[in-house]
Image: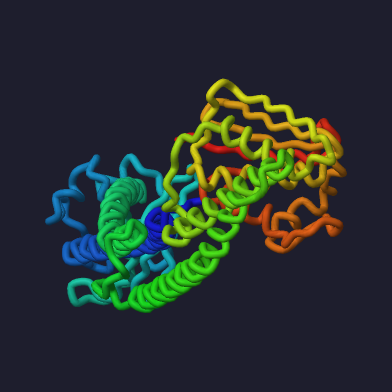
Length: 448
């Protein structure tokens, strides 16, 4: 499929130009052929006039001079053929040029005056014939057919040369036309390139909207895009304002909880619970800050870092082990030394937190996290030995609010948030069966 608009237009114009020339070429050849035949007819008519002016009738007999005014009749190899027949079709005179020709022609003295025709001999050779019926010669009554002939071979040679020149001329004209069409399309599509540059500037934040310095055919499009950009900015502003209000509302309760955690009793169990509480409060605070940052950026504007994975996994697994301590979950980490992912730390924390929390909640007793580096990619995989996900439900559970597990509390947004983060980093998420028996979430990051 041709994706370039200029190439599509050029191809369509080239096809139309070729079809037009293919249709025009036979018409031109026919016109040239008719014009050439008309020229031959006029010349043969002039040759017949020469014979008529030289002919005399004496005592009922045709008399022709030994030398005719047109010297071509007097030269045997000249190819100028002249014949005179009487009313009964008997040949009474022939020019010297006919001595080497054996032409089978019988005139029709039928009162039609003159006739221009094309005849074919038995050997395949063709001639143009101009036949004139004469009733008066030199003022005396006469009945003769005066005939001038010319071989068709000369006409055909001229027509072949003309056809060859037409092909060459049309080929050169087609190339010149295609070059002009390419230049015209390049100039005509310059406005689209200008529009594309403005869109790039809008995306980069260098300008707020599109200008009106475009052809009238594009103004409706640019107006619609400007309205869309304005609506998107307003919606993003409302989103930021809502998150600001939410963050402001949560900071005070979080500060109270933190104070409560610091003031809990001195018993061993209470100190452990206090550490868990402090860890969760800290994570909630980080996520609030992270979501505020995401709200202020576009999808493609998230800052990309190289974040070491192992410390985050250790921290998350330690916290989740306390939350699900009744399960005694066994976690295995298969990571290269100092493995890193090209994701901002807050985004990676939320991504891993949601995937691991989902694995801890649904597993029987095993969770495995592995990371593999390939050519231009990094693959992260989170697996469990839980019930798994039916193939027909894989896409549904990635949608916001959809949950297969109805036995545990939750809002069904964890995996949708994971997919949103993955899309923000142009990564790929797939869900299939794990060798452990449960689900395997695989994330492939493409390295620049």
